[in-house]
Length: 142
Image (cartoon, rainbow, N blue to C red; front, side, top):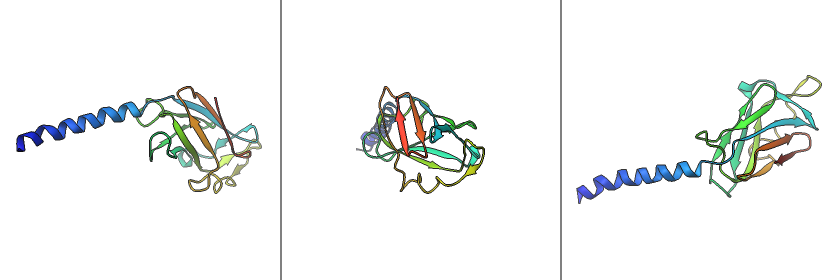
């Protein structure tokens, strides 16, 4: 009986690893953040977080962080660098931004936190880019 379990546990572990990697692939989504159609950028990329958090369709309970650049552009590479799995995601933003007039603002912080964010996006295998407008509270995917 002990011999059977010796091989069963590693086999199940390997089977789980293979399934997980397949589910973790999809498009690498790029985009930028705007305020009322004007480009904006984070005050500090070190203190700025942009996340896709799954809402049920797609990978359950998963979140994916974007690589955010100083100019406000971002890329979602996915958990293992093979893109974001298709699904329905809420978009969470934490951090101050610099408006088009050059002034930093924290006025959007409460609006786009995890529990409050009105932003949702459907990622499909065809999704390549998204534009997030903080003032309009919209996400456009293409």
